[in-house]
Length: 117
Image (cartoon, rainbow, N blue to C red):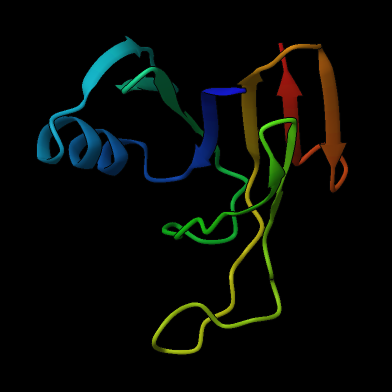
C-alpha cells in the first residue's frame, strides 16, 4: 500500500504556501485560488482553503494502526499535545492510498475520509 495524497483544510493558505514552498522548498504541482499541492516524494500534500475552521494554525498528529494490508489513523482529541496544554481541534482531512482493492471509509460526518484506489 502506498500513500498517494493527503488533503488538509487550512485558513492560512498563504502561510502554508510560504512555509512548504519557500522555506521547505517543496515542488508545487498544482496552484489555484483556493488549492495548493506539493510533491513530497511519491506522494502529494494538498492544502485547500477553508474559512470554516476553528483555529488558524494547527498541528496534525497521526497514529497509524494496522499493517500493510490496512491502516487506520487515530487522533486523540482529549489529550493535550502542546506545551501550553491546548487540545487538538477537528479539521477536515482526506487520505488517499494506492492498494490492492478499492475501498472508502468516511468518519465524523464526512470530515475524515480514507480512500484506497
